Image (tube, rainbow, N blue to C red; front, side):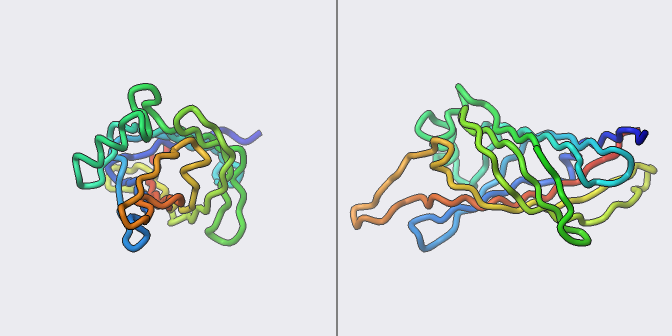
Length: 178
């Protein structure tokens, strides 16, 4: 019987970034600065790991305060009523040497949908203090309208202000719990 190994996100060495088209011609990048998560494995193999992740809407940072406040408002994420975005994996399957398909339930603004993301294992190593760390890069694309993020600004010229597809780029370092 394999023992369960628990890993916890090291927020100092992790980042959650998203990108969305703005006015169709440029891309706005943003970050969530506050998040937490765990990964649990049977034994030392990451395949079939159980992954949980939560991030705080209030920590959104697109480098512009006015836009951040709009994103937190009821028109968008409604941080007051739905303070977190959560993800709970349903499967984590190896597709290549260091590549995995991560499938799970993403909950945004009270709406839960099954999403598929790509995860690339960056390796694992021990730090100066003897802690085992493992790194993953998780990427994917979701349609914001699937989650009730339906706000659409249109310019006078008829251009949509915010694209529907949101690209996710998440670099995560996990610390193995002793």
